[in-house]
Image 1 (tube, one colour):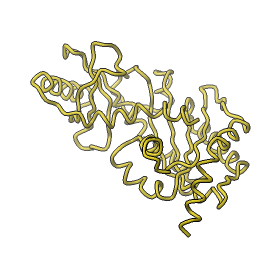
Image 2 (cartoon, rainbow, N blue to C red; image 1 turned 180 degrees about the vertical axis):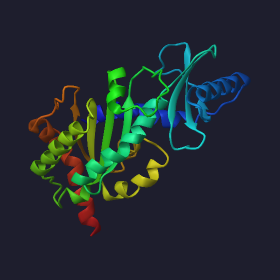
Image 3 (cartoon, rainbow, N blue to C red; image 1 turned 135 degrees about the vertical axis):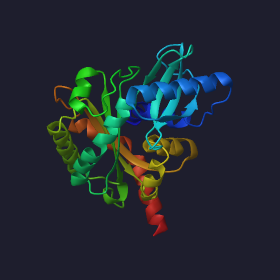
Length: 277
């Protein structure tokens, strides 16, 4: 689950990082102008390019990536590609708008199960860029038009509310909550969803809201900090997928395997908490 989670959200972090790349020479300026004009014409609203450059992970070798946001909402980061001849612009604004629209209803479902939950939602259509300009379509219509999409739902919890002083997590209770969440997501039509539940240290949880203002990949940011700097942020991650037919691809044994895999982090967190008391 550690590697699956990282792969699922790495694209979101790349969007955030690309926003740091500046726009420099005259060709870049022309590309920026073309992108902003094309999106204005498509959606009838103004956009601003935050960063331009890089060909890694593009549709082909003839395009460059960019990150934009609506002029009135800098927090909504949108992936864009533009051909090097500046003739075609492709964007994932619809992906982002639908994810934003889903955040509140999915968040309410999560809070009904885990009262302290924070969530992120994203739509991953891979290298497919929606052609429609309809940002108000339903999620059901979206996955009919783009059946390759996976909706990524990341739930973040304060691990201290679920993990005891010995680093143990009540597997039976949490697995029951996963089942309830899966059923409620299906009832609302959120099929083709990859769901990740992360139990954070109290310190990481306390800074989640502030980090979420800067990036839409808080989970990956915390995981990378843990891996690279040794800062204990994440105590356990588990999750499941809901397929288009409603099938959930996880078993109690798989959940338990996830819990066992993260036992060392939970015990480390418990020891650190005990030492500070």
